[in-house]
Structures are given as C-alpha cells and as structure tokens.
Length: 408
Ligand code: TRP
Ligand code: SF4
Image: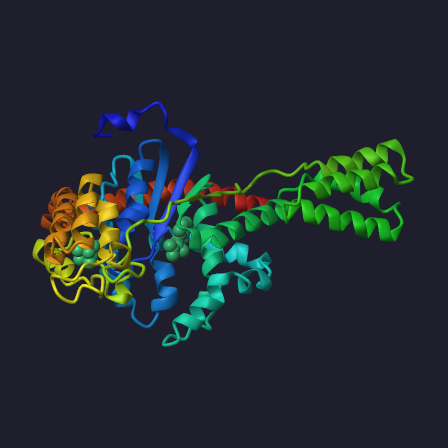
C-alpha cells in the first residue's frame, strides 16, 4: 500500500462497496461530478470494488463489440484521472472474473420472468433505443447480471444514481429468495413439515403464503401474522415450536442483501442545459484538450433574449449560469447576476471564469492520467492485480452458493 491514508482506522471491511460502469464511450464531467468524485471519496473509508461492466455494455452493443473493447481501458484511465486510487480500491473487469457468469446462470434458474419484465428501465430502453433490437435474452437479463455482480462480492453498499435503484431493489429480492430457497436448516424444515401436515389444508396454505411473503418479499410484518396463525392453531406445544422455529428463520445468509448508496444528482447539466450525455453532443470529456474546452464553452447557447451585447438577460434562462453555480464562487455569482441583467458584461466575458474553473479542475486529472498514457502496461498491471483480487472474493461466495445448491 503506497499511501498513508490506506491504513485509516475508519476502513470497515464489513461494509464492502461495489459499483460498475459500462464502457460505451469517453467519460465526461457529468460522470466525474455524478459518480467518480464519490468513488474517490468512498475508497478512503471502505473496501471498494469498482469494475468495468463490459458484459453489460454488450447487452446493448452486441453488434459493435469493438466499441466496448476500445473504451474499457480508456475508462479505467478516466477513473484513475479522477482520483480513484488502485492502492485503495480494487479495479477489475467483469468479463475476466468468470464467476459472475456462473452466479448469473444459477440465479437465473429461480428468477421469475415477471421480475425482469417489470424493471422500469427494461421497457423504457427498448422504447428509447429503437435503432437497436433489444428484444434479446441478454438484455432482459441485464438486472440479473447486475445482481450477480453485486451479490458475488457480498457488497453492503452500491453507490449508484437514482435510475439504478430498481436494479438494486431487485438484487435484494434475489438475495432474499436465494437464501429462502437454499439457506434452509434441514432439521428445522423436517420437524416443521410434520407439524404443518396436521394443520387444516387452508391454514397450511395460508401459513405458507405468509412465510413466503416474509422470506422472499421481505414483508417482515407477515412474520407476526404467521406466528399468530400458529398460536391460534390446535397443535401441540412441540408442534407449534417447530413451526415457530421455521418462521423465525433457521435461514443461513448465503448472499447478503445490498443497499443502494444514492449518489446525489450532479448539479452540472450539459452544455445546452439538458442532462450531460455523449449522445446529445453536449458533453465535456474528463480529459478534454484545453483548447476544446474553451471552444465548447464559448459556443454554449445563452439567454436567447441577449441578441445584441446591449440587450439585458436573465441568468435563469441560461445554461452558463448553471455552470457558474457548479464552478464559481458567490462573488462571481453576484457579478454575473448584476452584469447579465444590466448588460454590463458580455456573454463571452461571463463565460471566462467558467472556462478557467473547468481547466483548473481538469489540470490534476490530466496530470494523473499522463503516466498511464505514456505506459499502457501500468493499466494492464492494475487490472491484472484487481481481477486476481476480485476473483478470490468471488470464488469464496461461489463455494457457498454451490454447496447450498448441492453442486459440489
Ligand atoms: N447498470 C449500471 C449502470 O448502467 C452498471 C452496473 C453493472 C452496475 N453492474 C453493476 C452498477 C453493479 C453497480 C453495481 O450504471
Ligand atoms: Fe448567460 Fe452570462 Fe450571457 Fe447572462 S451574461 S446570458 S448568464 S452567458
């Protein structure tokens, strides 16, 4: 470990953090402010795993795998540029840890199709990406593969944006269902089965439904209802005890339920005021050349009311103002407000502090990236070591999974 901070006492190995990104293009400042800054912060306090989700990228780019291949390495350089530290976090590539595929396959056996079909991004994306045929098995399985990514590291926290919440929620359900199906204690189960056989059929059915709701759907209150049902039944004390033991668990946790760690929405919009996105052509790359940054900001649209230099404007109607809010101090904000509404400043003048601030922010990122650009084998070494490390944890989980499912 190279840095002193890596031995920080706040590191809690129990709270493993995991997140991934699809390598479909150069990362931009939206990724930096929306995710990477947060990753770089988390790595000081947690055991972090960050990975290149190249299989996920292939669910939409299966016709152009070269895009995925070309962007994987560059994306990792963007991470390193943003301050993600390979001495603190484990960086790896999904497709090089084959255990993800095995868990994905095994989870697929018991995952109801309806769970996959009801994920909101599923139908949305099929609508939005009309030029691609996404009625594929792989795309339907996207959230299940993501669940495998998360569960295989027993991750506690998954830093993601709000759009990913349904995927994390589904990962929780899948873990719960797995533990409920394969984490049973055989002795408790056998006794409970004998006791349940003495219940009237309707009660037995009802009890089973309540347990399933508690175990698989996480509806804790159903457990109380199940206990009350057993208490009111005409069984012997020993039989009731057997059923209660079953209700109370006797389940082993084979896969840990993760939690989303919601990343606050980046305040930075794209150059045109819409969300920053490469596909909108309104993005500034993390490692953009200085001249390009300058050019792009100078070309940004402003308040349409300012046709001439002498026309006053309103910052609220101008995307440049949003950049000021993200990048400049309150004195500058006052200067913009006054200068814009009185036509005391021109738009190019107004943009200069933004250009300066972006360049200032990017300078250390360019410097951090340079050694990796000069010597690509450094990135290869980081990923080799990261994949090896990830594999150790993934294999440990898979041992438990195989054993629970009777696969040895
Ligand atoms: N679906 C995520 C996204 O588009 C990427 C991803 C894949 C991911 N597997 C993951 C994120 C596991 C967190 C955890 O951003
Ligand atoms: Fe936008 Fe600044 Fe021009 Fe006002 S002066 S319209 S805030 S760029």
